[in-house]
Image (cartoon, rainbow, N blue to C red; front, side, top):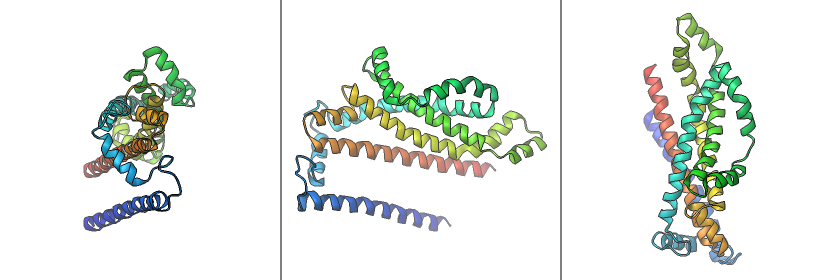
Length: 265
């Protein structure tokens, strides 16, 4: 069974890599071979790869190497995303499990949820400047909302039959929560973490585009100002690659947690 599973995973990986190679091939044919667009407007993959390696060692024209921009973005992302998950998951569970917490928190949550992250940026800049705090708060709000929604939904999806069985065996409310509801909600909780990850990166880049002195969003903004689409694409690829790695890590953690729960049962 494990061998078949590993074989299917390798097939999935091969197909995924094939799709990426196909897109790169079409991109190369359209720009470098057929020259449907000027390299100054939309550079081909050869130019982008060259620029990528140049940005690993050169600080021009934006004042930092690609690694320095990436580290600056990761610091903000980890801080805002981590705080959003630490607050959002327990709060979502508490809202779904306890009606009094739900009634107390929901009015404020329903007020904040529709407000896009970009709308908070000017206010946070006025309050905290353009440092790490303002950007981390924007990411925090985005991650917080996604984690609350999915944790709340996951707990609410717990079947009444399972809770009734817990009552029959004399389980306390805490035991029903931690032994029945939360394990049932685990897939939804991890879905919330993955959604929050995408939201966090979007909010981070938006914040860095508007107010920052370093980071991947700042890199893209500066490249746009001096008409360097090759650097813009390098920044976009870096954002996508880091997001894909984080998503894969979360998926691996989810699989291990699920296996651990099954083993306990």
